[in-house]
Structures are given as structure tokens and as C-alpha cells.
Image 1 (tube, rainbow over the protein chains, first blue to last red):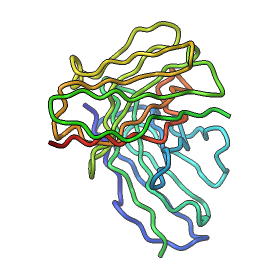
Image 2: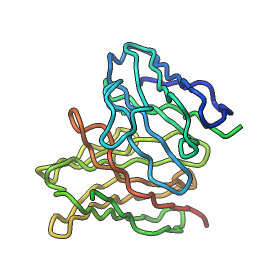
Image 3: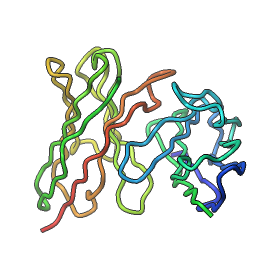
Length: 108
Length: 120
């Protein structure tokens, strides 16, 4: 089973700042990684798939990069609505599909 | 607007079964896989399985084989997840999610989640 490890666990930043979140796979998953945003009480939302493709309707400030074992999600300038939990998912080697433990992005 | 709306919270006893529904709107459920996942308190998401787009066959994750049954009713655009022989460890928020992009194994959109609490 491929283990996804996200870092950091929590990040405290201010609106307008740039942020980079990390997701590391226990073995190569080529480019088959997605990023999701999850706010309390809401459905998770797909942001990025296949490593770097933005999903429908996702603002341009969100970008994904990486391949193999190391991936990043970058938010170029934080908006107030971006404070949430972000988690990654791989679909390269499954079953099982696996997820990272999440990074909580909180307002400083 | 593509949307998935799930049934309400459930409280069930150990050993019982629970069935969660997921009503789709804005698209045809025969055109996309429907996946099911769960998240227990303080844990990362866990994948349960999916029902195929164009037929009623399923692929259930190994950890849940024999306990999870996925079905659907295309006449009302609904999908169902039934989990049997519940234990306290099955307490979690359960999600349905449409499989989209690539080979249909990215999840977009998701339902709002259904809290299943197992307690005696």
C-alpha cells in the first residue's frame, strides 16, 4: 500500500501570503496525484488532478506540481476562503486508493 | 449543477447494518463511476469501493469485502452503500463521490457526508 505523508500538519498564515504544501509518496506514483480542499461541514472539493491539472472552476491561484514521490500544492496569494484542510490522494497503484493525513491551513 | 445529496445521520447498534443513500442530480449516474469513502474521527480518509458507470458491478476494497454492498437505482439517480456487522470502529463520516477525469478515479463532486455513529 502506498503511504502519502503530508507536511506540515498545520500552517498559520495571513491572507495575501503564498503557501506551498507538500505530499510525499512512499514509492513512485508517477504523476497520479490529486489535491482536495475540505472545509468543516462541507463536501471536499477537488482542486488538482494528475499532479498539475486544475479541476473545473478552480481559481488560477491554485497550482500543483511534482512527479514520482514528491508533490506540492501552491496557493499564490491566500484568500480568506482558502483557510481549510488540504489532503492529497493517489490512484497510481490501487487497490487501495490512499490519502494523505491532511494539512490544516489556519489564519494567523 | 452537478450535485450529490446524501441521507441523514444514523445511530446504529453494534452488529447491525446501515444503508446510506446518495442522490445525484445534474448528470446521469450511468455515465460515471460512483465511489464511496469514509473518514473516522482523527483518521485519514479510507476508500470503500465503487460501482461501475454502465453496469451494476462493483469493486470493493479488500478491507471491506464481505461487509460492504454497493447498489444503485438508475430510475431515481440514487446510489447506496450498505455496511453490515458494524463495530464501534465503523463510526465515521461516509461520503459518496462521482469518479471524474482520467480513468474516473478522481473524486468530483462529493456528497456532503453522512455521519454514522455505532454505539450500544
